[in-house]
Amino acid sequence: MNEPAIKKALKAEEIFLKRDKERYLYEMREKALHDHVSAISSAKEEGLEEGLRKGRVEEKRETAVRFLAMGLSVAEVSAGTGLAIEEVEKLKQN
Image 1 (cartoon, rainbow, N blue to C red):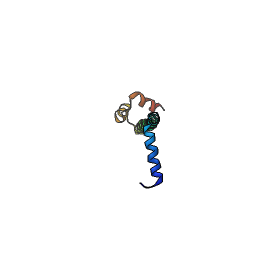
Image 2 (cartoon, one colour):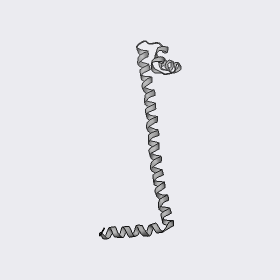
Image 3 (tube, rainbow, N blue to C red):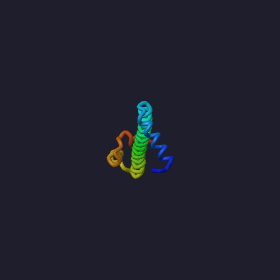
Image 4 (spheres, one colour):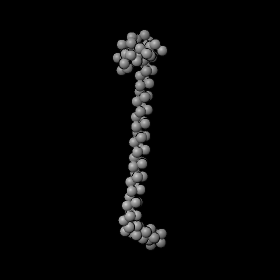
């Protein structure tokens, strides 16, 4: 700890910690940064979950189209994919 830069930093920290207003502002800034990072992380997770959900639905639709092409009934396709009968009927019409 004989380094001049370290001594200077420690002295600045000591002075800083004695000043309530500066410490409060610093803590609020740190909190805001943490909140921002947390919000971004949460938004990324929500976006990923939504994308995965849409992908699963699209896969079910593609499977339903293949089942229909194989000659399975609408009821069988609905049971096999978990899609509503109405949705399978729409896919069959297209």
